[in-house]
Amino acid sequence: MCENFTIMTRRIGIPALAAVLVTAIAFGLQRNNAVTPKNSPFSEQRAAQDLQTIVGFGPRPAGSDAIAKTRNYIISELEKAGLKPELDEFDARTPRGFKHMVNIRARRAGSKPSIIAVTGHYDTKLFETVRFVGANDGGSSAAWLLEFARSTRDLKLQNTLEFIFFDGEEAVVEWTDDDSVFGSRHDVDRRVRNRNLTDLKALLLVDMIGDKNLNIKREGQSVRWLKDIIWATAQSMGYSKEFPNDEIEVSDDHIPYLKAGIPAVDLIDFDYPAWHTVDDTLDKVSAHSLKIVGDVVYFSLPAIDRH
Image 1: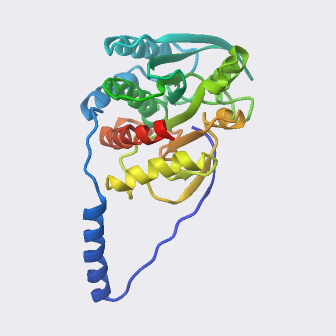
Image 2: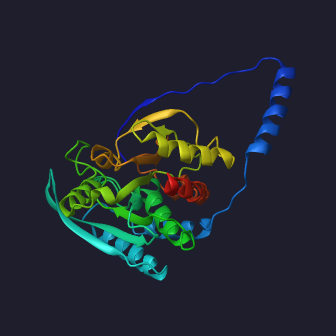
C-alpha cells in the first residue's frame, strides 16, 4: 500500500473517580444494549492457513514466479469452493517497461445482474535489496478475500457478488498516478470498453487488515453511505475500537472507481509500523483481525445490497 495524508484523533479525560465509575457503568449498559453478537461463516482458521501459505511463497511482486504460485493457489481454492475463477491478463506499462499482470475474478450470482465487487490485491512491493514478504501488505488482503469468497456461499443477495484479486497495486518504482494500482485501473478501463461499468453498484476494497492491533479509520475519499453502513455494523457488533470514527485519506485501488463515478470504500489500517519494511512478517499479523473484518463486511452486505 501507498500514500496517506491526514489523521485526526481526539481524546477526552475525566478526572473524578466517581465520574469515571458512573460513566463506565452507563457505557457498559449502553454497550450491552447496542451490541449484537454475530458470527459469520468466515473461518479464522482457514484464513490463517491461507495467509501462512501465501506468505510462504516469499516476495510476490508483479511478474514474479512467487506471484504465479500465489495465483495458482488462489485459483485452486476458489475452484474447491465451487467458484469459476477467470483470469484477466494484461500488459501494464511501467517505469521499467511492460510487465505482464493478471487480475483474478470470480462471481456468486444474485437475482440481479448488477454487481457488488469485493476486492483486494495479492502482489507485494518490489524491493531489490531486502526480502519483503508482505504478510500484511498484500498477504492479508489476498487471504481475507479468498476466505470471504468461501464464506458467502449461503449468503442470499439480490446483487451478484464479484470477487477481484488485483495484481499490480504496488508501484514498480515510486508511487505516482501512472506507477500504481495497475490492476484496478485496468479493470475500470476494461468495463468502460465493454460498456458495462455501470453494472457496478458498489465496490468494497480491503487492504492491510491483518494488524494485530486493528485500527481501521474512515477513509476520507470513500463514499459516505458505504462507510456509514459498515461503521454502523461494526459498532453494533462491539467493534468501535477496531473501527473508530477518526478519518484518514489513502490512495489505493478504490480511487480509479471513484474517478469513474462508482461508489467505493477502502477498509485499510494504515497505522502499521512495519509497512514496507522487512518486519512485515507473520508475527505482526493476526487471523483474528481478518475474522473481525470478515464478520463486519458479511453483515454489512445485506444493507449495501438493499441501498
